[in-house]
Length: 389
Ligand code: SF4
Image (cartoon, rainbow, N blue to C red; front, top):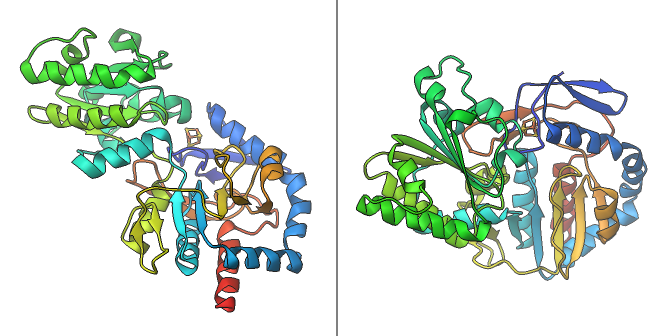
C-alpha cells in the first residue's frame, strides 16, 4: 500500500507499507522514525482493543462528558496532525469557551513570536531544494525529520531541479554535532552550544552590516551565498536566537536572498484554526469570541491529543488530564482518563499539511482495528456538551 507517513512534519508520501497481521512495515525506506512509529502503533494494538471496548461504556462516556461540560477552564492541546481532528478540536473549544493550543516545540514558539513582531521572508522546501545555493542548518533538523537530506538537500539532481545550484550547493551547520549525509567537500560544521547561537548570529549580522569578518567565520561564509535557505531543529532556537535569526535574514535580504523554512509539527492545526477562528493560534474562546491567547496557563481540564505513541507527551501540570488518541503504557497510566482513538494515516483517512505549510497531502486508512477517530470522540463530546446547555 502507498502511504503518507504521519510521524514527522516532512510527511513523506512515497512510503510503501505492507500489512503483516496488525503490524505495518515500511519497505525500502531507511527512516528510523517511520519504522519506530509503525512499530509503536503495532505494539499498542492488543492493549487498545480491550480499552476501546472499555471506552464505549456509556457510563464512562457520560461521566467524561459531564467532566468536560463542567470544567471551569478547558484546554485542548497536543499534537494534531490531520484536518478532521483539527476541525473537531477547534469546534469543541469554541463550544466550551476553552482554549485550543498546539503543543509547540521550543523553536516553533520562539519563531512564532519573532515573526509576529518582525515578519519574515519564508519559503517552501521545494523552493529551497530547487534554488538555494547555500543551506544553513541550526541544530540537526534531520534528527527529527530523518529523510530531510535525502529528499530535499542532497545533491542528486532530479528534474525539474536547477541542477547547477543543487550540484554546487554548500552547507553550513551550527550545532553540537555534524549532520550525516551532507557532501563532505562542501560542508562546514561549526560546533556551537545552544546557548551561544544567539551570540554568533548577532556577531555575523554585525559583521555583514559593516562588511567585515567575524570570529566564527559565519559572516564570511554567508557573504559568498547568493541565495541561502535556513532550517532549524525543534530545540535549536531560544527566543533570543529566534529574534536574531529573523534580524539576520532581513540583513541578508538587503543585497541577496535568504529564506527561512519552517518544519513545524503544528502546521495543520494552525491552518485550520486560521480558517475557523481568524487566528493561527493559540486561540482562547473564553469571552465567547475567539482571541489570541497571550500567556498559556494550566487549565482545570486538559484534553491532550496524542495521535501516536511516539508523539511528545503532555507536560507535567496540575490539571485533570484526558488523553485522547494512542498513548504508550506510561502515558496511559499517567492520564486521569485515557480515551483510545485510531492513528490518522493508519486507522482512518484524512488530510494533513507538511511542516512548511505548502502541501496538503492525503492520509490513507491502512488498518481496520475498530478504533474510533479522535474527531469522532471530540464530536461526541461536543454534542453531549450542547445537550447540557
Ligand atoms: S522523514 Fe518523517 S515523514 Fe518521512 S518517512 Fe521518516 S518519519 Fe516519516
